[in-house]
Length: 146
Image (tube, rainbow, N blue to C red; front, side):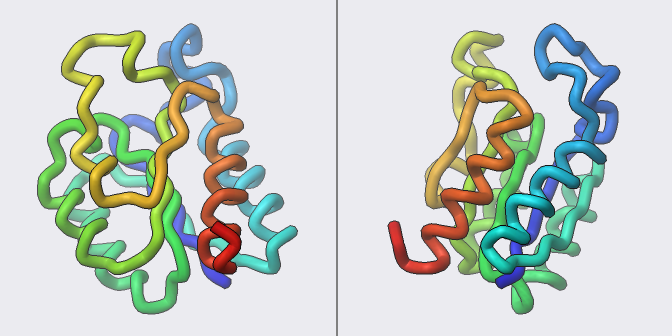
């Protein structure tokens, strides 16, 4: 099993960026936790972080044939990235959307996600641990348990 992990704009600054909102866990620590949990399901992880919507779309199109599922934190692109939304919908993979913060407790423009209608589920507001929960949920979906 192969899980694709995508992190969008500004998530490379996790650990330093607004720790009162996003916590102090770095992206490297998140990726390590995702890999460790995925290994328990005999899954490997391919990860990408990009600040560019086009780069994410290109990577997803290149990797989708070898992937079994997608965990995605699109960052701000979740709210306005139409090309990314279309790529996620077209890839045909079960997907779980992750938001570190509780978007409904923040600015109104964050309340709507373009990705939510095209993913299997979303984990919102549970901090960096949301990624690990997303791997668990995705593995169950891929294995047909959900």
